Length: 140
Image 1 (spheres, helix red, strand yellow):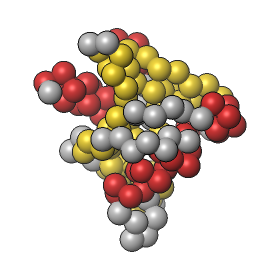
Image 2 (cartoon, helix red, strand yellow):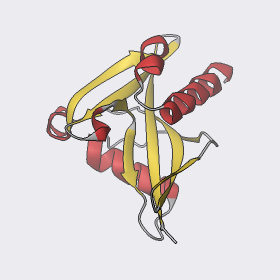
Image 3 (tube, rainbow, N blue to C red):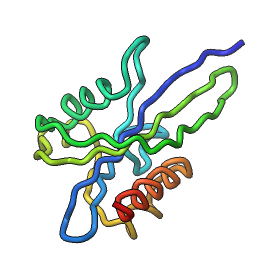
């Protein structure tokens, strides 16, 4: 029997005129050097919304709480003897990003409209999640 890991993926967005923009991050190394959302392991007993707000604050320096949206499309995959469940959430960014934290934690970062963000997401699961978020924001 393998290990089960839970991760959260947080798709930050902000309103810019009539269309939302999405924050894309590129890690400094490894497989995670693809464009993607903010992501982190979910600790044992940690509540999803609490973990989301914590990582937005500590990893990006956003102190003003934003709206959290459950995208209702968890992804589940396995790699050898590890099972991974990723919980996908949207997060409305209403505060400013800490530029020093961004430069320290990621090799690149950018705000993009959907037409650029969607095709440049490095993983299919991330493209599905940002598509759902964009649809939900457009329907609201």
